[in-house]
Length: 139
Image (tube, rainbow, N blue to C red; front, side):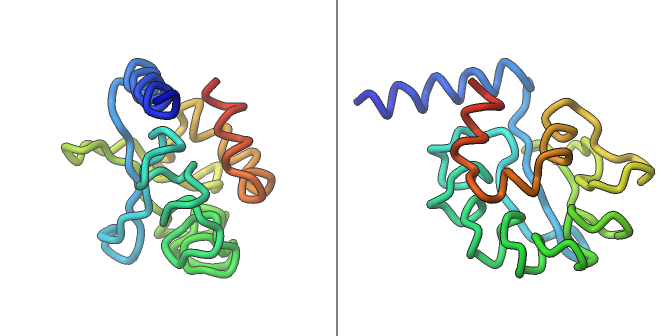
């Protein structure tokens, strides 16, 4: 019961804070879902859920997988590649574009809202414990 209440509170906070639930899409045509950027760490699609697909550092679709397509700093589809021309995009459920999710500081239309900037700065540490960082960032 307590877990459900915390989940509802976290969803409300992220909705109030951002107004929209934000999602990451990557790949050549940005058609590969990479998870929810500002969802609760209890959400199965959240990049903050270490036990879910997108928050698990061993999953091929996780930005936290240093050996995977979307988490490897040398891969063109990774947000951690500072030279990539094809980083993931941030969109809401209606498909509205919020920018490219990338550490490349000079990438045109780079997502530059506070959450994105925080993740860019600390991504190397975040990938080691997404749950701890979720608590630091959202609570």
